[in-house]
Length: 291
Image (cartoon, rainbow, N blue to C red; front, top):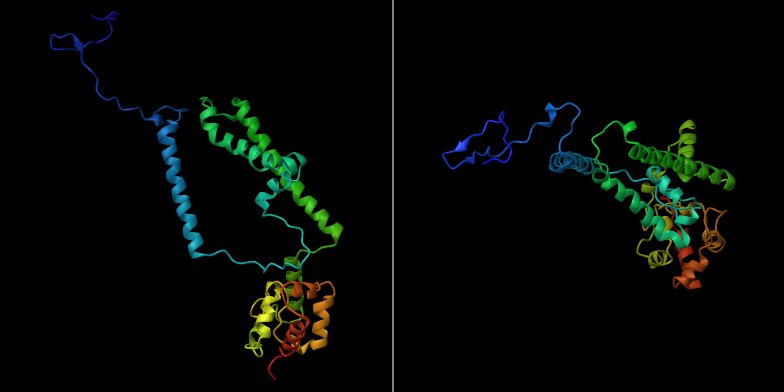
């Protein structure tokens, strides 16, 4: 017997057992039938988001396979540069300059605060379970979002502005801008914008000479590459047309007008002797274009 009698409720019994007939599995209502409502986050919404993420990821993979990222200019270890990250990391770059995020607090700056920020982002669907979707009716979530956006914009702008001031104070011009200006000047003069063709036409003279191994041992390859075509530094193909043996020895010992630091001590520390350096300079002086 039912404890609560409701005359308006239709009760169906199974036989004479007075056991109410069950309704079986109730299909959840379609949330689209209720304006202003949303579907269940788990598993409906989350599953859809995962599927969209998989499609986007596959699209990125297809792009990276079909169109590899172009390589920029070779790094020049001898150049005086101000290191800068890509633009989308500028806010973190600037943030890590502050005392409370570096030095003794570097762990807090690199793992603690970013971990709280990204952890809060991951937990947002579970912490903010309100039904209201209008941003002005969700003051806490909206305030945190606006504060985060303002912080990212401020730190990014501050980092870039400070970088420009550093360039002006030190009188530096980024290497890629120097290359672009040089290419533009060559175009205006009707000259080739790159000397890659002329480098390919000049062959290495006496490649089997033991000086080739001395050249590699002296770490010259870090700037001039193993094939002498240059890797951030100038090409040494045909360098004998510009400098004789004595001039090359002077450049090794004293450097070249701020463009190349002295490499004598580096060669000595790498295990070369004065005789080896003399032989290396003699071999480089032989590197001339074919007549």
